[in-house]
Length: 184
Image (cartoon, rainbow, N blue to C red; front, side, top):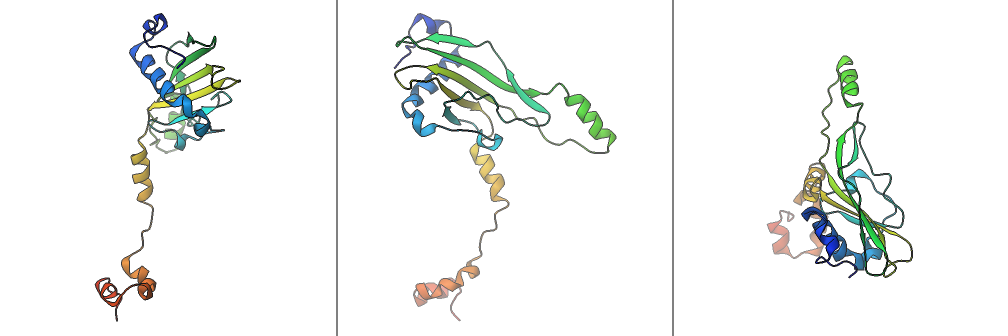
């Protein structure tokens, strides 16, 4: 591709930065299929990946939490004369967290929302091989699992009972209709 893991640049990357680079490398060929124009918090989950033609500047956040850059930006030169800049972001409480909690307590309210635990990687890819303008890549390494979100949503779905489907009786044979309790 455009970056060699055995290069001198690779020696300057931490193991988790090298892992993030491998995720970018394995997905850059399909960047057009992963292109997004905006995001909401519910979209971001573990292993979420997306490309954008504009920077991911306005990531979703909560009333009492925001994003924190957890290490310095790292810029890596690549083969076609371009470069890749990557940065890791985590969630943290907002500075006003304690004050807002105190206000809620005085009002007799309790704050029950947990501050989500995320680790995301954001990349700025300047590589003429793939796109004439800079590409932006986001990978959520740590976040809520998709299965958790689906199981929470399933609690609110009303599934039909077998008797609710009795109108389909005319499309079955007599034996099946009897087995399903639709025969009179």
